[in-house]
Every structure is written in structure tokens, then in C-alpha cells.
Image 1 (spheres, rainbow, N blue to C red):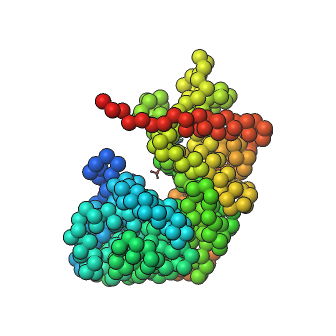
Image 2 (cartoon, rainbow, N blue to C red):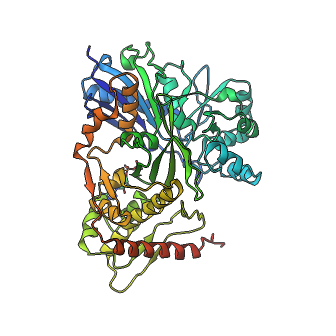
Length: 505
Ligand code: ADP
């Protein structure tokens, strides 16, 4: 049978998706399924690894049915995933020993604080490019070991395996035969040396984690393994799993940001901005993360990464918290109903401020309210805050990497808002390009698998996907743009004067 498709599996924080791509890069069939979030305590976020695996099998079956695809027609599989989320399982039975501890979960904050207090921060940053934070997998493993010494004991005896979600899925897809990860997922564990490109023994010793837990690290585009011949899911076909990357890196690839200086921003619940910095890891003086963008054909490419905690979730707040709108798409009409925000600034620092301010105690604020301020101004200022926060990170990247930015590639749910895209172009005084096809994460994973297996030779072959991309050119005079941005900076500065105080009753 002709090999017509690449199957991408996109296992995200809130849902699992599978998309079959055709030779010209178009999504031919897709299937999606939500996954449950478990909140055992405030600030903790966990998921059931078995449910994750079941949801992935479910969406694979969904794609095959929807597209009437025979597994034999699938050339290769690519995987992309929520990063950092940590699973430990029994290497014989495949049974997870605990829930998956999700990237946002704060349950390992004390572990991170302890390591920071030991003054390990400079060492960890030099080796991994990361600050010590509960975000990263190593703290989550350590937390689990502290909570459950019997798990630590089993790990020390070599009975357990660790994986981020890519590894967990790969292990299951291959019938428990392959325990590997890719270099981008490895680079988010806080255990991987991004210069030597190996697990770092000094860090493993420091954090008392046995090396036997860790998967073998591969590049992004190579054959990781084959689907299990005894698995009914693919009717016994052994299909190569030929590409893996963490979700933000996959989006960078799917956006075709394959040259030094290219930047993408995914405007989702939060926003993740990555800049391709070529073969040099750049150390940021302003709290950006240095990470691996991808490794293909033996060459490693690095990225600077900045994240915005509150992006689309500010729009959700307008809808669910303030009940000012009924749906997110409505915001565009409100934004366009007024000529400007009338000097109103909304700083949505709901959980503190990230790069380049790094103020955990800051809380949200609104500035410039007058008797004339109306609902449209308020909504517009909230939407504008996504663009201002993006500008903060992009300007920091440009400064740290010392490369000018000529184009911002946008995707994610909130990028559907034309007003936001235009305002972003105006505030950055840079072109913003949004592809018609927004599933860049899945496309990136598919591209890696297609490249490995010769389905595609280069990114140019799937460039047609971008033919319908919309480009937003800066229209605002630069003086107006600068003035508005200065107002934002003053608003942020004023926000940071007010500190969050827990109320003592
Ligand atoms: P995630 O992958 O983080 O779950 P998505 O990329 O699906 O997020 O984007 C969803 C977010 O985008 C939501 O927070 C929603 O409020 C916001 N959003 C969706 N459509 C629009 C729109 N037209 N304008 C502004 N924000 C939007």
C-alpha cells in the first residue's frame, strides 16, 4: 500500500490530539480528546499516566477511522508533548508508581527552594541553561522520593524508569521495548548538560538520582523505535516512530523558524516565545531560559525562551471572572469599537511577573481609569496587555542575543484575534505572520518524522501550508508606538510597588 501519511501525536496539557498529514503538509484527518486534571492540593496539578496513554490510543483510532486510513498507509509517527511533566513506572510491568506530576504543579517548590538555598543555582544554570524551579522534572522526581521512600528504594535498585510524556508514550507504543527521549525534552529535566549533550553525572550525584532511571537521549529526527507488532491499534504494523520534540520546540519547527534570529510566539493560555539562536547557546542576563531548539542531522541548534504566565487566560478572566464577554472571539469587536484604549493599561500580573521583571509578589493592576473609561476600553487594554508582555520578552531577547528581529511568527488560540496581531505588529514595529493552519506543534512533530523517513527532504516541501498565512505590517507611527509602550513600562513599574500580602484573619 502507498505510504500516504505521517501521523503526528500531540499530547498537550489539557488534551491529546492526533493528526494525519499528507505529502503536501496538509492536515487530512484529526481527532482530539480532553484529559482530566487532578488537583490533590492547592497549587498541585497531576494527571493519570494511564489515562494519557488511553487518550492517545483513542485519538489514533479516531484519526484512522475519520480518514479511513489503513495503518499500512502511515509512513512514520512523530510525537510532541507537554514538556517537563514527570512519570515514573515499573520497568517490568509498565505500571506507573504515582500520577504524572504536571509542569505547572508547585508541589516541588520546597525542593527547589532547598536547592537554591544550597547555592546550586549558578552550577545548574551553567550546565542546563535553566534556573532552579519546581517547573523542571528533577525537582518533581526528588519530591516523589521524599514523599515515598519506598519509590526511592525501588529506583535505587534499578526497578523503575523515568520519562517525560514523550518517553512514556514511546515506551507504550513500542510495547515496552524502547526507553528513549529526545534532546529537547531532555533539556527541560534540569539534569541534561546542554553543552556536553549528556546526562550530567555531577547533577545526578548532587540530587541523588540514579542514572538507571534515565532514558537514552536521541536527536529530534531519527528512528526511536517501531510500533509493537502485537498491538491491535496499528493492526500489527510496525511503523517507525521517527521524530520527537517538546511542544514549544515543535511549534518553532512547525513555524519553519529554522534560521538564526527567527522568533515564534504561541499565544495560548500562557504564551511561549522562542528565538532560534543558531549553534550558540546564549546566556541571558535577564532571566530568559537557554534551551535546545532541536538537533537534526547531527547539528544542534539552541534557543532562548521566555514565557508569559497570563496571556489567553486574561481573556478567560474577562469572560468567566468579570463576565464582560461571552466568548473570546468577541473581544475583537470591542477592541475595534474604540479608537484606542484611552490610555488605560491592564497589567495582568495575576500570579506575579515573569521575564524580564521576575517579581513573584506582584499582583495585577489597572491604570489610567477616568470617568470616560468604558467596557470596550477595558477589554481592549486587556487584549493589548498580551502584546505588551510579548514585546517585553522579544525586546529582552533581541538585547540578549544581539540580533535584530524582523518577523514574529504567531500561533496559538489567541492569535486568531486580528486586532491583537495588528497591535502586536504596531508595538513591536515588526511584521507579524500568522499561518492559516495553527496546529504548528503537530506539524513540527510530523515534519521531524517525515524528514527522518524520506517522506520529505526539506521544509520547503511543506511550505505551501503557509501560502495562506496572513502578515500584519506595522501601521502605527513609531513615535505613537514608543509612547504607548513607555506607558506600559510605567504601569508595570507602578504595579511592582504594590506587593501581595496574605490576609491574616
Ligand atoms: P492552550 O493550548 O494553552 O490550551 P489555545 O492555544 O487553545 O490554548 O488558546 C486558548 C486561549 O486563547 C484561551 O485562553 C482563549 O481565551 C484565547 N483565545 C481564543 N480565541 C481568542 C480570540 N479570538 N481573541 C483572544 N483570545 C482568544
